[in-house]
Length: 104
Image 1 (tube, rainbow, N blue to C red):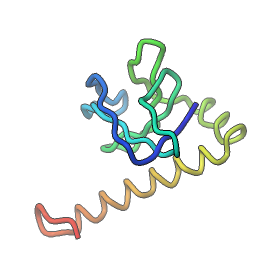
Image 2 (image 1 turned 180 degrees about the vertical axis):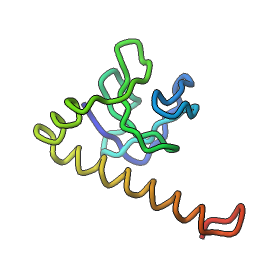
Image 3 (image 1 turned 90 degrees about the horizontal axis):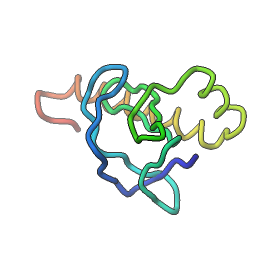
Image 4 (image 1 turned 45 degrees about the horizontal axis):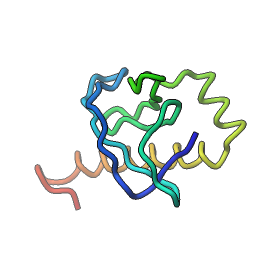
């Protein structure tokens, strides 16, 4: 599994399996950005759920067991996911606090 940085990749639109938000892009976080592949993990920009792609590139919620395996086996990846989720939550808080239509 890889987590990528910086470059945004468009993919076939799919719904977040948790909140139903339509997702059609993923942004990479590593030095060698590449498009998402089966088994990669992303985070819903709306509800901040951890999501993975199945073999058919359909999104599904990451199970608690899978999350635990990443935390144990790939701690750097897990820290990046947790940090990214926290940043998304901060962005949501800023959006709610800012005057309508303006995020500072």
